[in-house]
Image 1 (tube, helix red, strand yellow):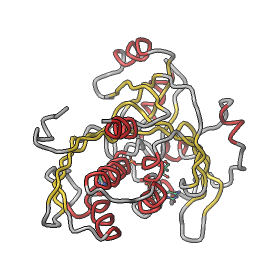
Image 2 (cartoon, helix red, strand yellow):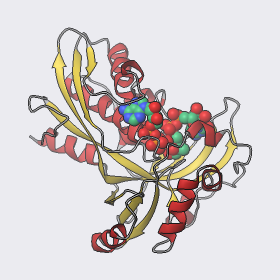
Image 3 (cartoon, helix red, strand yellow):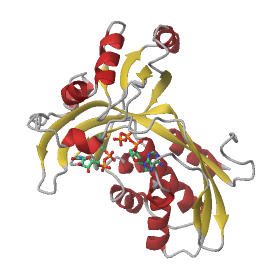
Image 4 (spheres, rainbow, N blue to C red):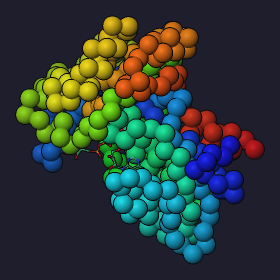
Length: 291
Ligand SMILES: C[C@](O)(CO)[C@H](O)COP(=O)(O)OP(=O)(O)OC[C@H]1O[C@@H](n2ccc(N)nc2=O)[C@H](O)[C@@H]1O
Ligand SMILES: Nc1ncnc2c1ncn2[C@@H]1O[C@H](COP(=O)(O)OP(=O)(O)OP(=O)(O)O)[C@@H](O)[C@H]1O
């Protein structure tokens, strides 16, 4: 399937799905400033799309500009160059991006783009690269990249890289997108952030426990997020994902989620998507492998 942003001649088109943090506890802070956390990741059937074509001159060229992100800082380009360097390949790639996920939304758009680039180029360049190696490479790009590389809903510990796959219900989610960019680094450096939540066992989470420790800080700093939580909570129990800005509630079916979405004001964009325990990226790659 091609889109306006991806030309029909792209050799490989892959999804870069969003994720939700169904809960997020902060247990402590490490010496390097990163936080130890416990979080539950599930994917959504909604995301960006990337197109890739092979180049034999070694050049990595992303043809889509993202406002405010220089070409060489884009996680897609950084992921491609790291893989190129580590694998020693002489090949390069043309890459196109159809950006649908809000940036700084807490639904992992940049991290998912990076993971799709790693897996897509490993496929296109025919590299013999294990998932463990790609996940380690991904971690150097961002704490959330490994879960997208592995593509399984997971309970995450450490800084988010110690992953235990889990089977969760796959409800429909309404995700509201407050029109504000939340800085993850800023939230993690707020002195009022709760950093001493005791560790819990994965089983108690699967029974529905947990909260998002970042939520009070984000609500305090960003009125758009606070207002979105107040509004959505009138219809469904609502929580922040990651460090925001997006907030979400779950529904047993799509119709119920759509009904609430229709009642939100135009100033609060939203989308409805189903939770997925296997990411769309991995489902697409599995189909490719069968062909
Ligand atoms: C909070 C989560 O969204 C949960 O999914 C992620 O762990 C954040 O992942 P991310 O956006 O990929 O984060 P990174 O790009 O690695 O880090 C951004 C900034 O967030 C802070 N950070 C991030 C992850 C973590 N476990 N502890 C932190 O303190 C650090 O200040 C870091 O400079
Ligand atoms: N391909 C990309 N897509 C989005 N953002 C990118 C990309 N490359 C670099 N960035 C930078 O990364 C920042 C964070 O983007 P991202 O969309 O991953 O945030 P997020 O949804 O808050 O992520 P997370 O849930 O992992 O905290 C952006 O503000 C942007 O400056």
